[in-house]
Amino acid sequence: MGKPVLKGTRISVEVILDLLSDGWSEAQLFESYPNLTREQLIAVFAFVRDGVQQDLYMPVRRSA
Image (cartoon, rainbow, N blue to C red):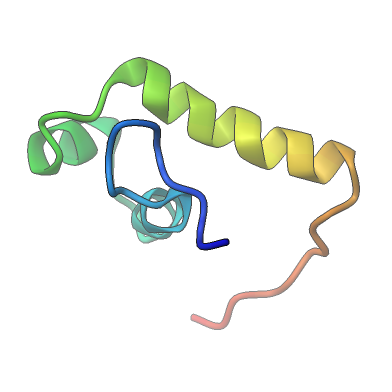
């Protein structure tokens, strides 16, 4: 069991979330990862949503 990755890639959900939380835009993601699809990006948010709904995540403050 490793970190969850986007189907058909080696891109982890964590990497996508880290980049977005660092201020990356969708355009920057698609430019840097040309094989990334909009559907895969939507799947990242669905994955997180499902975890939140199941109370798998606890809110954590991120230091600046």
